Length: 443
Image 1 (tube, rainbow, N blue to C red):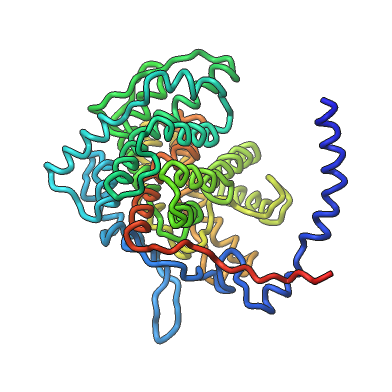
Image 2 (image 1 turned 60 degrees about the vertical axis):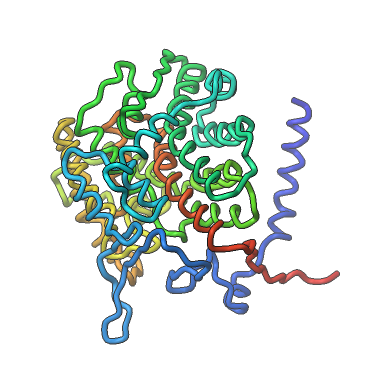
């Protein structure tokens, strides 16, 4: 305790020294042409690589001018809407689309069956791993729990350091299979030891899909409906990949370029994803929606909703940040294609769960917020709801605890990370080493 007090005293004094010596005048970024966050003044990303895995567009050129357009997202040349629509109402497609992203082409029926069976058979952990690793140090931060488990899994892999493509592909398939277990078992440990709730650990079913296993593993009675599985499967597909420029995928490629092993690379990506500016965004939407419910009496009264949203934007309500979470995106302007395709599945689940009134509130906010933001902010590219606006609502309806929201994102995104790691290993033999200009004065 004495050491902790000494540390506190030192760091409180040291904070002012750090603020004085680590601050850089904002004018210097303009003076030297440095793009903050690797984005130029128009929000365009600095080109740092090439990829064949996915593609995002949010504008078009008309008469030589860049004009905002409805967002589009492709996986390996296929529009994501088409991939999901082609699955129909009953087929669960996580494994099929995972094959597409990893291999670069859609599987034949025989290849799909083989790959799905392989994912199911690999969905197991080393003997006593759950007891000796996951249960030993439970944490409310499930992303940290998973990251620790990922790094520990390398100790069970005799070829952990082998970065040949067959071995990395094998490691990737195993991690894709194991991620649902790391997430759910990590939560179960926290729920039992920290929240004093009952403990139950179900074994995965190799014949079930990833979405079905997630729901089965989470629930004491193992039961779920076809609609629940379909909606979760769709959410996983839509979160699976989103271009090479997002923070965690870029982290994957940076660490891969150093020659590091798969486990270290994916652990680094996990650490990036957990940030509230990245994968943790849907948590802020849920916090905001709870606040709105506490202040809105009639979910159908658009005037009442608009008045409270105005207070949020004016920093008079909720967290005083002036943001309506779930609205806007770094790339998309007129629409997020993932939100467009996801919304109809959200409506089906809300119908099944008798949550039509909540759905009405979401839809009214979706209608009102973009107009309000455009009026109160200088938005040149337009603003629209992103997929995070609805994903938290879906997870809540599915009974998924909030501690697992970002972990579920990781269960999906491990596929995209793996695809980008393999592409980086095949196409590039240079370490990614960006430049920083020193503005330090000499003494």
